[in-house]
Image (cartoon, rainbow, N blue to C red; front, side, top):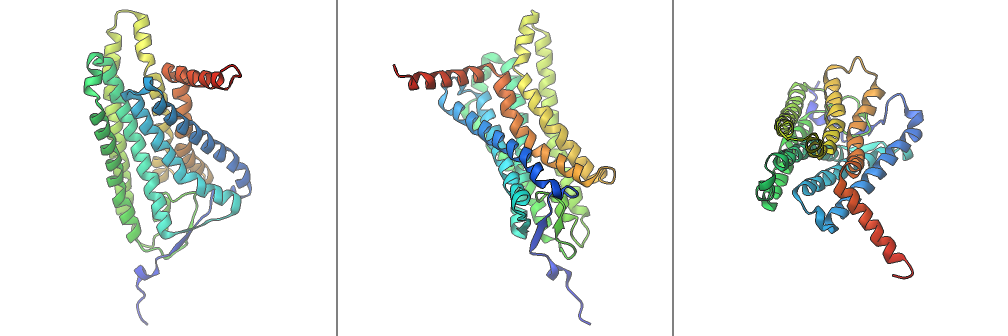
Length: 321
């Protein structure tokens, strides 16, 4: 009998099965998913528009916030439309190449979000510790270079993930128990060793996330030292309040992300499948939705710019205008 070449058996189509065990509730689950997507898109697009038209927001802090909004838009758009097709229309099929493309964008934007949060912490460090040199240090070329490097870092880290995944043979089931093509969910279907894939994926996530978290920690340690050295309690409170929105963004981004990554590799036997999939979706959807809300509520200049925009709109629409 002729020997079958395993590499010739690679599947061309996968089935994204949604949230396993909760198939009957997909319609109801789609409501919060769709709501978070709409809020994230409206909030981030609105924030980008506000920063573009409002001259007082043409500052390094808001340029970095624009990067975060662009990343969030790309992230939720990579996930939610396909999930809605699964929930609403039972369109579960996805081609192998489309699956790899979705995987690439999801993990690239996830890495970029971590990088942008790190850049924002450095922005706060410079603003508080070197206020007189803030504009001369964070010039437009520096900000542009930082953004490009963050983007390229995310792309270069994810390319090997996609290449390794593409080269694996898939000759077992083609059903992915997920709403999107997550790296580990896909490679677990391979009929070959995935040790290299699992190790590289974990190391890449920990190195990028670890580096960013280390930079954030150092930045805030220096910020805290500078704030403690201020003479009055009011000055300390006012200075540190400029960081609260960013701290909230860090918490909402890193906590569920680290939980999802670690449980996917080490704790999958102790957590039900649908709980893990829900958490994996929430860590991609919650930060893009909450970031604009947090920055809108916590940042005085953004609040004032929004009120100014609405006031101008009302004045322009009044009969006497």
